Amino acid sequence: MSLDNFFSEFGGIKRTTVEAPKKEPMTVEHMFMNSITKMKKTGMKNSSWYDKKKNVVVPKVGIYKLFDTKDKKDGFTIDESQWNKFLDRLTDMYNEGNLKEQLKEIGIKQKKAIDKRKNNSGNK
Image (tube, rainbow, N blue to C red; front, side, top):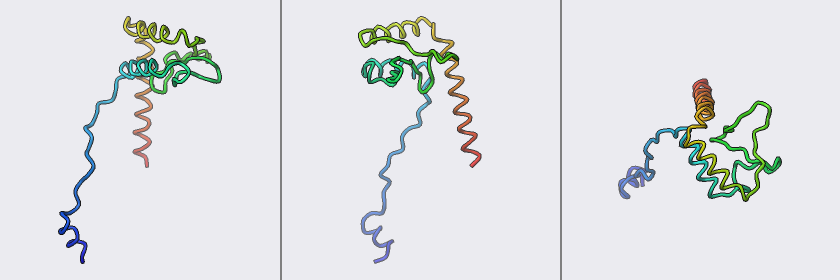
């Protein structure tokens, strides 16, 4: 039996994967609020913000530190009983517009990284 006959007999090969609609990239602000929501669910010790070695919490947006000081002092020493209050205050600071500068800097870093990735993939 030929391959064409086999395909014809059983209706041919059909596409089984569904193409996902293209999503717009998340804004830095949206990423930040998603992080806050995730951190509330996971708890301090299980969060990606918690540095077990240094025993500090380092708020991040994606892979970037929210408070990126050049002297490496970028973590908060809080205990688990303060975790929800810490996240609530961070949310309040965001809602009051007090984190605009930090989020703007993260947006710039993120754009540079995306552009660099695009340039590097085009050179192959």
